Picture 1 (cartoon, rainbow, N blue to C red):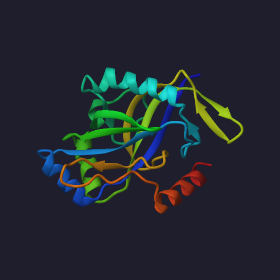
Picture 2: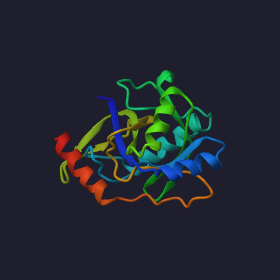
Picture 3: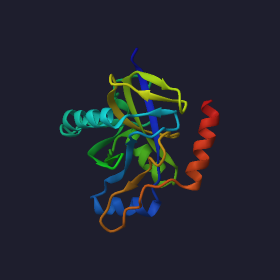
Length: 199
């Protein structure tokens, strides 16, 4: 049976990177980072097979990014529908770097987008989270659940508690070198705490 599947990745942006990004992009905040990771158990205990994630990324690029409507919300709603009143950002590019699905995200000048921008400017640690519909199946050897072939990608939302390791966004600009996405000691501690809290 299909259910709403949400999974998170952390995002890190330094305040000085935000200023540079906005200066280089005509006042727009544009960030780049890992949106989702294939064939890796995330903090929710789920694994996205690369073949399924590649298929959905291709469809998402064609039907949403290519039509400039790859919008996401600030925090996950209870619905599988993107609510325009809560839209905070739009994904403008997406590509693969090994098993990482990496994307470029423009923070929009909407009420939720302005909140998102101010949170980033204040140094709040946020994550990006995929939202989709599908089913999962238990994989007994490592205690994880594998996302099944019926998975459909809906959106990527910004959240306060990510589940995919290293899902932090970085500002895009030409004047500051992009910081590599990495697992930090803080990220590892956060993953352990999240595992405990989620049971």
